[in-house]
Length: 280
Ligand code: LER
Ligand code: MN
Image 1: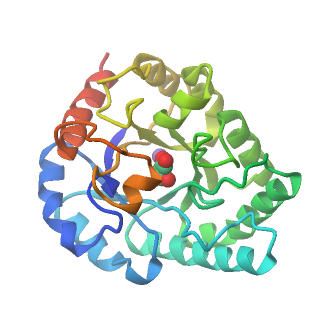
Image 2: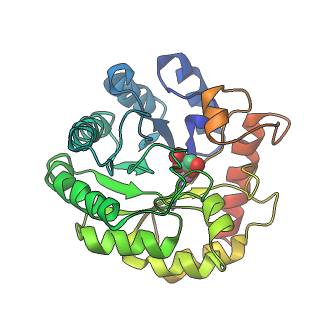
């Protein structure tokens, strides 16, 4: 398995200003960095590729939709703009040297219309991802769809729904990003849910139940690692948490207090803990 750190811990838009972090990230034993891609026009793909390579780090991409975009919107023009945006993001993912683009790429985080998802929305998501299939093939990128907890989306909350969505899309490059934080809220048995993702699992976000340091709370880590072993997962384990004072980003993730003394503690202690778990 490979260990990554998501840069939401420090910034909403990762770029050259943050390259000074890379040597320290490498020194603490990470194999890669998960960079955020929200606004393509400011994403420094080739600079990121070069800086990560210089530091011996690999890249994955985490993406969320800007508030004006929505793959399941009832407006065809918005869906078309969202597919165009995702096409650009997939190309930029490849340009940054990454093979995975991951996140809740169906609707903006925090969009809660106050009702259940409709059959039409489900169909639009399936069709939207199917239309992106050839783009994923062209750039050899895997799209990892992330179910979020009910307070961040109404569209996809459970692992079972994520599996059903991927089965309906039925494209080998479309699969699941499974996040320990969201699963802890939504699943009765997170480890069993993780095992049920089977061949659809493409990426994992590791985070404690309070979004703090992995290993410091009540996430069932032995269960999580047991499930990963059971399905033969050999991909990324990326620590994802959020800066404590990052304005909109902290607000989107509902971070209203310091989770640890410093954000770095989540990364450095977290990776140490996760590596120990592999050997237990
Ligand atoms: C959001 O809660 C999350 O888990 C991320 O991966 C980005 O949306
Ligand atoms: Mn996540």
